[in-house]
Image (cartoon, rainbow, N blue to C red):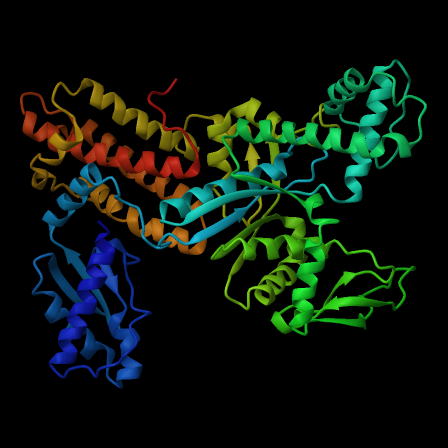
Length: 577
């Protein structure tokens, strides 16, 4: 049940009636017509912009349309009143009994809140995709949590979602990893080593060096790189991916696929992707304009193989092959996304770090060209996270050497707190993560406030002394829930299906976290009102019928809280400790 969608359907049916009556001309587009909560709750329960949308194409006064529409809507038993406001907005009040139907749906319909938006379309979310050179750090954590929650949200909205991690194991950074592990291997043999600039000095490589010693003994001692680089590279990459998988598991993330960049080299896949673009007339030999601003000392105009990305909205064309014949970093990324298109995905989402902003237009251009603009690509940037503890910036991890790891974060506050707080800001806004604030038990801490609501409801259910099965609660006389504070909770529950659809359309899982906080606030406010007004208490001594109706209301809250927390990957608290 989606009450807002139902009332929008009623608005459209009423407009059909106005067309049949000759009040409105036929053939007007209704795509922009919306039904949503009014900005001021005092104005009603729902508002529609239908008259404002139709006025210009119908060549009519918007108030005249609104007044005619209000008269039609008033005939429906769900509409208590429909009043014209301002230049032609229409505010509606919903009959009290309708909210009881929302609560019953929440208690009995397993699909309550779910959207059919995706219609089973195949969609890939690629996220994390960190270089396999060390443990995941706090910046990766935000993108990982965002991508995982987005994937869950889209599954909730009926998409067939694949979660994928792209292993960047084809570049020079993996050679640096191999050399760093080799130093730890020498160290494991009792040698003194020095980590020069550009190597990875973190303690996390100590056990990798020891494991390499256990595997090969002294076979690589006093040998040049040509004897060990390739083997150590593969050994170290596998060890780092095991570490990364364990890091992801610590924050509740399981990938469907891990895709190796290295698998694109020497297999013809890069060549096939570039040839496909060439056949479309999008590859040419050319010389790029010099970069804006101060020129690098080593810059010189060189003829390169270029992709005509400006044909698909990019600022400049992009090189795919250097003047020396080597592929650029962009070429394997094109090949990887060509593989995504070839695998039959209907939509693609990439979650990148904030430092990849310059990659957005070129990657979108490549996918548009490769798919003949049939496969949309949305790229989400996860902005930086600043960590604080005791009012001071949190210091670096000794284990990592240069950064704070995902494990540091989870060990400090737990997976649930980490995930929820990472979603309390939109992905493209900077995020402050204050260890003291995210663990304090107050209304100012969203994760505590939402978890506390779920646990509080559990405590009521345990003490109820009546049948609190969902079927029994749904059969209670919910028409007795007439107090404004009770109705406010029911109205917020009614917004859940609408909110899911909005969040899924915008690829914005942070909206789920915001909504859960609002719903928890309404519940806590109702709980507190019961301290002053005995009639609002959930347990009414000697009156089982009223008790069950009130418990039905808060059990519906709990159902929605559990659904929302599930999307965010947060375990609902059964009790607070």
